[in-house]
Amino acid sequence: MFGISTAWCSGRVNDGVELLSEISQTGLNHLEIDYRVTGEMLRQMRPHLLNGDFTVLSVHNYCPLPDGRSREEASRLFPPSTFDAEERRLAIRYSIRTVQLAADLGASIVVFHLGQVEMAQDLDELNELFLQERIQTAQAEEWRKTKLTERRSLAAPYVDAVLFTLDPIHEEACRLGVDIGAENRLRFNEIPFGDECEQILSTFRGGRLRYWHDCGHAEINHRLGFLNHEKDLLVRFREHLAGFHLHDVCKLKDHLAPAQGDMDFRMLKPYIGDTTINILEIHHPATAEQIRAGVEYLRGLGLS
Image (cartoon, rainbow, N blue to C red; front, side, top):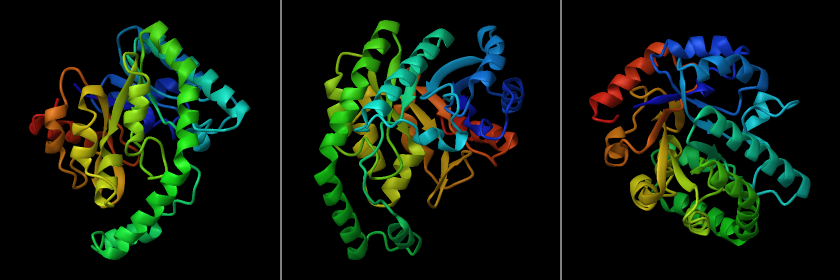
């Protein structure tokens, strides 16, 4: 079973009913409610979410979009890795609100971005080496080694901050029976990276902390030489795996409809099943027709 993220149209539609109408054109009625959805849009959507027209499988933190904040900044709000006490307070407050929303809507999980290690992370040079088919050269390896050495020297207090921020959120998630999904991120300075995912999962072992796999993010980091998509993520964290953001990748551009890029989705087949939540996280300008075709493409590969 596939669902679709409201991210496909939440950045360009202001009315919740109109948003659901657009999504209905994809033929999918299982949803992830994303962080660009405002409180007013959610109020407009709620009757349709509760009467069976649509089923909410997951919610993406922070949802709804906090009042007074723009959609453009939504993905950068209140990183759990922050050292700022007020920003951490807001991260906890709005995360708990999202967990409560998920429970209210019958969703089983909230997907989280966990913040970042503050450092320069301009990827232009590495991206260009990939486009020149030189990603396995000594120059690329030296670039990665230098950046990752710097990251390791800085990371520990940011990861500690994430664990500190997550603690009261996780407590509420346990109370309500909602999972927290730690999403693998796109940029190498973001959290979790490498062993950090193991550390975070181990800290909350036995609770509601799970791993959420974004296949596009993983694929791009694989292409840039940072990791092995399957071995370092899917195999390593399989026992913790809760669900997927599914989208295609063309070179280094992601969030495309399946079959619009060049990613080999067959790799995901052993990991997708009845127990995983499978969300198409596709962005504009993908069309409803491309999304419908993408779903059929995935089903044709035996993914469901």
